[in-house]
Length: 369
Ligand SMILES: *Cc1c(COP(=O)(O)O)cnc(C)c1O
Image (cartoon, rainbow, N blue to C red):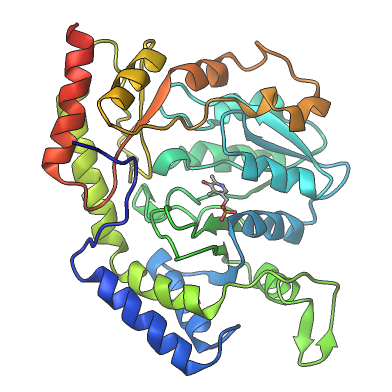
């Protein structure tokens, strides 16, 4: 058997043909940029989240840059980001000329916590930018309290967690302004690039709506020097269909994750990624285990045709791109340990139980030998 790390399958059955149909109809509608379909998707995604304004943008990176920029983040400011995150989040801070300041994740949840962020605060801290990594919400209450006490803003990066709950509310609704990505393999994925900014603040929403479309206030009138970062109508048409199935897609991910938990919890030194508290519902964008024998296990699985990945093998503070921040090995021991021990197993909606059983069997065999 050959098990891909990720594959698009027709799950729920019929989604493929609904998406195809929607694409063809959208082509015929002949309004490919900022048309009514984009507006409809923005409204539907807002309804899904339980309110707020949604502005469709070109990709998740742009959503982050626009969110931070709307808050006035710029040179001289510091933004606290996770030391184990995805590079896009950190690049967005750097792009604006602000300084990314890394904070350690929690070993069990992989996420930033108020306890790890607090020591990194300085007079220059303008915002904190937590990622709900792998589909699991951060402990938001403590992070929000910390921000409030220090007069700084919180911006959520919920690119990996569309539909994840914290205390019954969806992530993407806690921060002052929040960013997500519709990269095809995300839980809510388009058929190409896409992203969105979400905020309950009308002024910020207005600013982003102008800024992402060249600063246009009215046709041929420009109130500010903006950029071009728009969600296109074909992607919006795909996203409208996928959004209808998002709950079902996430439920299926949770079902598969539970099967992995049950089979892997007692095996070797494996740490399974269970939700870190009762406040949190994990939606398993990625199913990331930890083991001291990670490299050996990855190699054995590859030999058995099971594709796994590492998210992420090199912590950002080791990257050449961030040399100028002056961090060194040992500065973030938890992030460094996670990079050496984490392994993402295949998990995607439409994966069959027998495919998953095959993966489990190989892992059991590895630890039995
Ligand atoms: C995917 C992702 C992004 C970037 O999204 P793009 O649409 O690829 O620009 C940003 N942050 C996180 C956490 C992501 O997973």
